[in-house]
Length: 335
Image 1 (tube, rainbow, N blue to C red):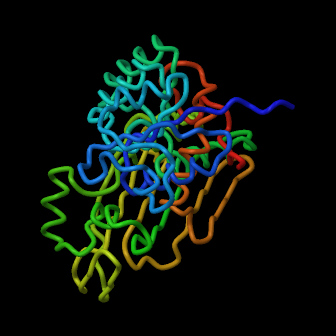
Image 2: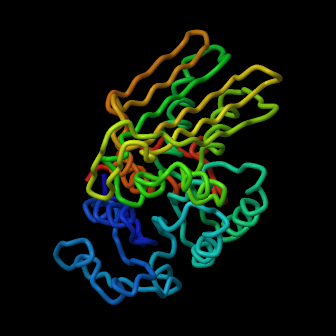
Image 3: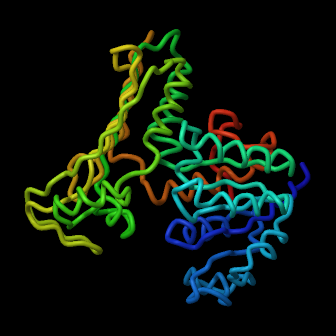
């Protein structure tokens, strides 16, 4: 067979996940990395290879998104800048204006909920008119607590309830995530930051509705709780020191109800020092399906892998805003 045409890729955002995604994209012969966008003055004007700690690759980091995106017209942007879909909507619309498909780690892009339906509508119009596609992807949300249990249900005749438990040892994760779960702060500070919406996981309700809709479990209402996990012993990581009685991380639970019956539960526990990290999927159906991933799915490594592996899928997808259940099965993109 003749060689497939390379897909031109621009890396939009060079935080820890963006850097890892760019490094992985450079190893894929199907992809051609042509641009890198960031606003950090310390990175601007540098060769992307230098930013990644390797030899030069001939791509200069710029804050001129328009010029970098134009280089990838018809290709794809790997977008890794923020969790809020409203906050990144202008960046995404700019990509659409240049005819660039996007796969984004923005957690709220996984699935529309009531609060984000308006911005989803605007983005869908922008990408549809441009003939490009936009996909929200990642590990959580995007895989463990939504797409994977949805796929597992393919062998069921019926599903009555679904439970997903994810326990993550945040000590093994990047510094920004440890900060996001409040590692090392007081319980009182946790409460203040929680009220301001500056703490915790983003995307649990998106995963909850994605999974419920995929399983045909119509929800009458949904609830979400966020509580601190308090350390019982001293824990030190590369990025934080947690004394006994201080916050080690979070317990974030989403519950979906049909009438008074809980039919979907997503239980995320992410804290430093967590023992027996794992992912558990329990489908109460015919037949029942129970899946345990020992050690859990690697959050940071797996996130950049999903983004890079999804590039050909989003380029081939129907124009507009797409979800993980609407596109072809994402799988590893060979070298």
